[in-house]
Amino acid sequence: MLRYYATRQSDGKRVERTVPIGQVRDLPSESRAWAEIEQQHLHQQINQPDFRPRLSFADLASHFIQNELNESADTIDPKAPSTIYIYQHILNDYLIPRWGQRVALGIEPLQIEQWLMELRRDKGLASPTLDKTRRVMSLVYKHAQRYNLIPRTQEANPLRFVRCKTTSEYEAIIITPEQAFATMMQMGEPERTFTLLTAATGLRISEALGLQWGDVDFGRKRIEVRRAWVHGRIWEPKSPASRAPVPMHTVLAEFMACWKRESAYGGPKDWVFPSIKLKGKQPRDGKQLVKDHLRPAAAKAGVLSSHNNEKGNIIEDDPRRFGFHNLRHSLASFLMRIGTDPKTIQALLRHADITTTLQLYTHSMSEDRLVAQGRVLEAILHGAGADS
Image 1 (cartoon, rainbow, N blue to C red):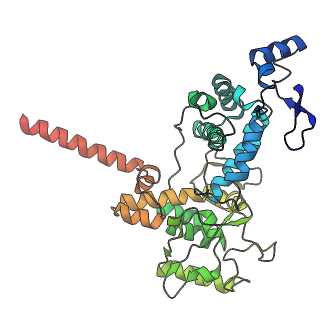
Image 2: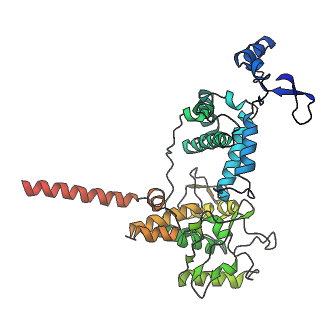
Image 3: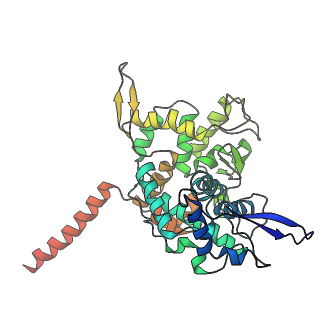
């Protein structure tokens, strides 16, 4: 730290100020520190009347969190609850611990690239996660430029020069309706109804957990999406498109009505899938539903790999990601497979953009690929036979 005295404009008093120079590991001696001060021309800068101490990355991140990720902040581009949670997670768990004490304008692009490679190697983070980390860090710099905290030059944002792979080798597990039925039959209630609800409607798990009985309109055969339960809190739905009501077929309505009769909490303001431990005051925990019910049932149904323990019980040991969101992917793929109009699928999944439906949520099954290839071969060989 470079310490110096300056005149405070508010009262004219001489006060001590500090400017961060760098980390001790980079400047191990006093002579190295003074050399860095000379290289940065700080001697000349601190004597300028308009000099502002250079901000650390933590300073920029704090300003970004306060003005962009604050629920009460008045912003023209409010973030979705899930986006706020992810951004805060990346900032607090990765970016600030690593770069917080560094001078924001002193961070080099190649240093960031090296760090991203270390995250891949040491923590096993996938390419999309690393790219999202890079983008969040870039957003912090762009925010600081917009508020004139740092210069509005291209060089002031080092992320402009950071390369990062964006694609992932991950492919969502897609199950057939028969596999979904087999999985459900390994469950009790209300987990069976919850699984059927998400599999048939495409509701996100946060939206299904956020349902209250007043949202389930048996007369009009539809379900209103008014809130989401995310990380122990009530949030607004993900987007305006997510607020669209979801149709409820008669068969699904019968399952829902049956569970309502069995539930101890059936009032309009009661949660459809309440936590019994918390006496209905909160919905169930999504992670526990996946860990304790969905994955074990999928293993027993043969969807996920498993082994038998010493007592002969089936223990799920599949390393692949599999949760209720896979049922949403599976629904889209099945509807596409049977020839459903893409706009109908988009409306059912409540996507704002149909490209999301087509690019991310429709997966061709291996059997479909074989059939498609067979048709091509048939056309090729038939043409060759006709010519001969």
